[in-house]
Image 1 (cartoon, helix red, strand yellow):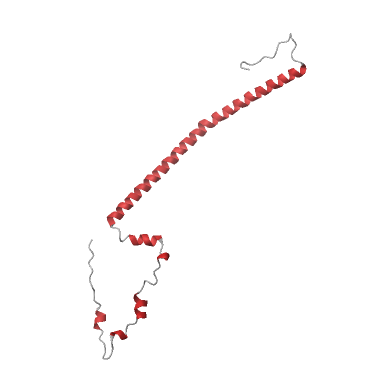
Image 2 (spheres, rainbow, N blue to C red):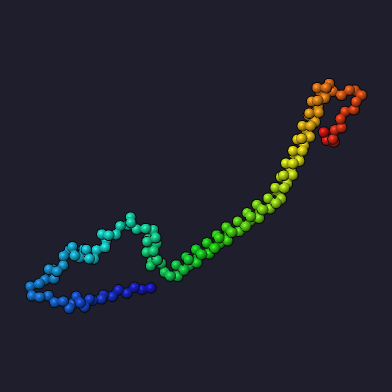
Length: 149
């Protein structure tokens, strides 16, 4: 892309003719020129936002490059969205399966542990009572113990 600079003459300015005794410098002053044509006084880089700076770069980047950047951005965001959605689905499956299988198993193990603890307490109570009573008589049979105790 080649930029062609062409000078355009203002016909209204050329038609003005100066009267006798008038000079062009009589009509121009520094204050008029600076107030009319100077925008540099109003410009402050500290007041410029990031958005304005990026928007100004739009004219510097060719349309093909911009479309490539936009295409890359859109494919990256769609891939990221797909990844997050897949991770969420996987987390849902894992947590649901853990609740459906793991929770009943944990409750069964806890119940079994509670039953075993109660049996131990009962054995300890019966052993304590036998010690208080002096133990079993030599001819009396001892209580029946379940296998494994």
